[in-house]
Image (cartoon, rainbow, N blue to C red; front, side, top):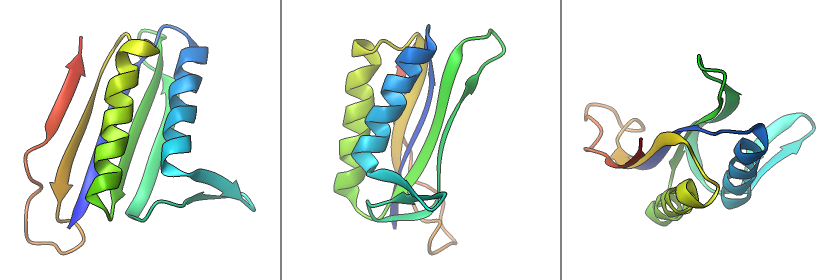
Length: 117
């Protein structure tokens, strides 16, 4: 069983996007060692944390991580949810759910999602 957090967020300025990216990296203990991305928090599969620009020209982040521990999922979800209004995010969503990708045969459980429109 794995504990997944996904986020898709839109910002008004690249500097605000960078602040959120850094907060996420700090929470999951993201580092680059010898040009290889490492995440110190126990996780499963690929970690995505992509900065870009959407079709409206606004800075965006798309993020997914599947933790081994529920507490890590809950902490990251709370961090992102709490920062959505503080940074601020123009619009977006963050969700968390329990998934079974590591064992197969079962669907993900329904997500808990926070949306700002």
